[in-house]
Image (cartoon, rainbow, N blue to C red):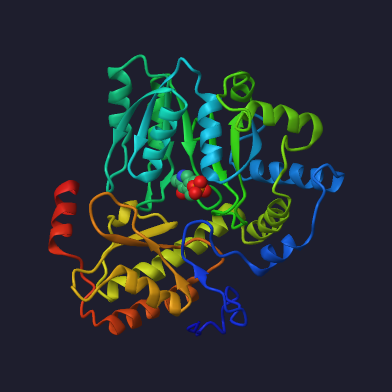
Length: 399
Ligand SMILES: *Cc1c(COP(=O)(O)O)cnc(C)c1O
């Protein structure tokens, strides 16, 4: 594998290590120090490991503005989806009816989860381009007084759209309903202020903006909601109330914890703090996004979303219309240059995605653009502009 290198000035590349850079929003590229922290075996019952668990919970809570003493943090083994399902199963009573706000694959996955766990819901599906807005949430809640809860996705990672969570929260509170948030790909880089967002609980995972290794997620929930969740969950292993009570009593996870991943996460938290916590991490990702989008636009690529909804987490680009372009070939050529990109996850148009999160900086992003340019040349693609039809469809939906 050949790496492009103009990164002498960058602390975010280790050119002696010929491993690909993951431009995927989890698992993502982690720092050398994070990887190195996984070289020790820990006993899960040992006091040293219990201290690590306590530290992890405390530091995550400290990242939430205005959480005061009202919230607690409960880690859950598994990938992010396990934590989402744990939150839904634990905080949605069997008699609840939920409004699910979807504008992409992760919102739809929430609806599918509610099918599995037999909780009643209504779906607002906004397609791929547009966020659910406060006024339409207010209207839907007013229309159906049997709705008790709303579930929203903070950053919808399938398109990269940053949903207006504060405006959604205002509408939910005004209607006297309760909000749950999937903040998987936003938490740690986008501020979540409990003074501005009123929610019962939200979730994220180890391998997104905190830049740890994959293996667990965490639920940050109001203590009153944690108390009320007793006996409510459909699943033993996903019962947030039970995990919370046992963890508070013994300092231990109920079942085998991902010890190495927890050790790596402690290191990742240290690096997150050193970078300036949420604001610092968010600023680097914003630079990554700006460098990437400006460079790709120079090549003729167009972003799926309007600038106002573009997050700093991941960006979706339309596939070029040029018949010489093939995504599979583009993927392979980018991989040969050291970059793993992500196929699109949209329902209608052909697209691909490039993540801006992980242990990468704008120098890396400049190299990504150079690699894209070289790959287009290798394929014989003359212009990266998208099909007129895709642009027309977007214009129609946005008007
Ligand atoms: C990554 C992600 C998830 C969880 O995905 P897993 O593959 O289970 O880790 C859920 N929601 C959003 C918005 C995500 O970005």
